[in-house]
Image (cartoon, rainbow, N blue to C red; front, side):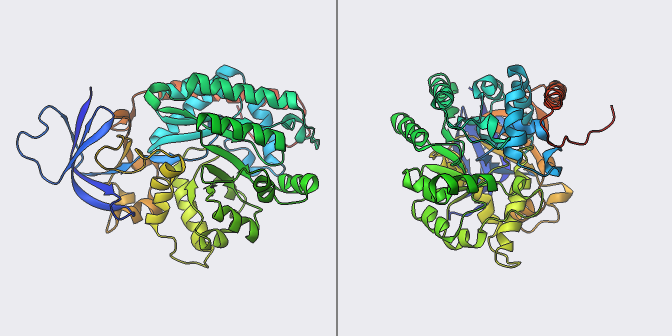
Length: 455
C-alpha cells in the first residue's frame, strides 16, 4: 500500500464552505487522506514517502462534469464552421470512428485531463464500451453513460426527425451492459450514469425507460437541455412547450440530474429548474467559441441555481472552463466582481462532488479520497501572489500542474504521466482523426469541411 506525506504544503481547505489556503502536512495512505498536521515531530510518518511540496499548492482534483472525450477528433475544426454542429458533425463523427480509434482519442483526452489537474470525468456519448477500458486504464475517476435517444439521430442532420423504438432499444441495451460491466468497477472508481441525449430526440417513452433504469440502480442522470436552436424548434413543434417544460411534464427534472447548457431557457424555465434542484452543467468555453454563450446567466445566478462546470467538446482543459465561467457569469451583472474566484473554483470541486453524490471527493479533509492536483507556486502565472485562488482562476493554466493523483496513485508525477505513453497516445489519436475525416469527406455530406494544414 502506497503511503505519501506531502510535506510543507500549502493546501485548500473548505471548512467555511469556500476554499481557503492553509499550511501544513498531508498524509495519504492507500486511497485516502489519513492525516493533516500543522507540525511534525521527528518520528511522525517515518514509514511514509516524503514528497516536498514547499513550492506547491495542494488542491482537490478538478471535476469535469460534462465532456465527450472522443469528440477531441473535432479539435480545431467545428469552432470555425457554421451550421448545426451537433447533428451535422458531432453525431456523424461519433459513428464514423472505429472502436480502436475511439479508444485512441479517449486515451489522449485522459492525458490532457490529467495534465490539467482533472481527476474526475463525466463522459456521456455513444459506443462508450469501445473506449471505456482505455479511459479506465488511465486511472482517472469516471462516470460513463451511453447517450440515449429514440429519434434516429443520424438522420437529423439532413432535417428528418423519425422516432424508432428499435433504434432506442439499442441504446438502452448498451446502457444495461455498461451498468453490468462497469458500474462500481476498479473498487468503485468507475460509475455509470443514465443519459438522455436531449429533449428533441427522446420521446416520453424513452424518458420513462431511462427513469426506470436510474431508479432501479440508484444512478445519477444527465441530459443536454436547450442546447441548440433545432432542439428548441423541434420540442415546440412536437409538444408545444419549452424543453424544460417537456422534461418537467415527464418528471425528468430533479437534484439527481445534471442538465447541460440551458442556452434557450427562459425566465420561467430557470425558476422551475431552480425549484426542482436541477444542476446546471455549464460548458462556457466550448459554448463561447463563436461569441459569449447567450444563456440567461443573470437569472440563473439570481435564482441560486446549483452550478457545475464541464469542457464539453474538443478539449479537457478545466482552467479554460473556469476562466470563461468567471468572465461570463460576471458579465451577467455588467462587469461585476460576482461571482468570486472562490465560488467558481467550487463549481469544479465541491459542487461537482455533490452533483455526483460522492461525498468523498471534491475537497481536502481527513477521510476523503486522495484525488489531488498539485500546482507549482513558483511559476510566473502564480507570482507575485497575494491570493492563490485568485491567481489560479484568473491566470492558471495546465502548465502550472505538476502532479495529479487519484485514489492515492500518481497519474502524473513531476510533470511526467505515469499511466499513459503520451507520445504514443498523440500519434495514435492523430491517425484516428485523419482516418475519420477521410471517411467524413468521402461521404459528401453537403456541409463545409474544415481547413487543414498542408501535408
